[in-house]
Amino acid sequence: MRELLTFGFVGFIGTLIMIVGANVLRHLHGGGPVTSVVLPTMLSTLVSYLANRFWTFRHRDSTGSGREVAIFFGLNGVGLLIQVACTGFTYYTLGLHGGVAYNAGLLVGLALASAFRYWSYRKWVFTPAAA
Image (cartoon, rainbow, N blue to C red; front, top):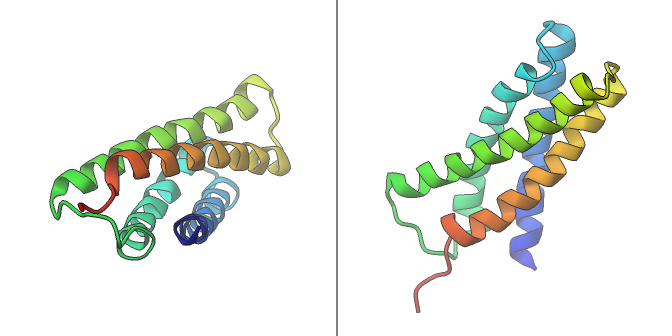
């Protein structure tokens, strides 16, 4: 339960970074609806890796190599694709261009990507400690 709660808190911080960053890039700097998601998500990924490695999953084995980092960022790439697909679907397929629709697309994409990330981190990145 502690692991899930700390993962959720780290996710909350990552969500703030992503949503605030995406909205700043989209609405204040005129970025595209999809490209405005990428940079804040990359920053959020870096913060999330550090917080998850040294707090959420600290009790799990670490390879201490670039393998863990590469897999983490690769899986986050899949999560980013999920988020971008939801944002793009909302904007381009549904034709919803307002701020509320944009943020709704971000949140749906984030929820789906977060579920994937939690499952994949436990399975492939932060493995159980060896007995």
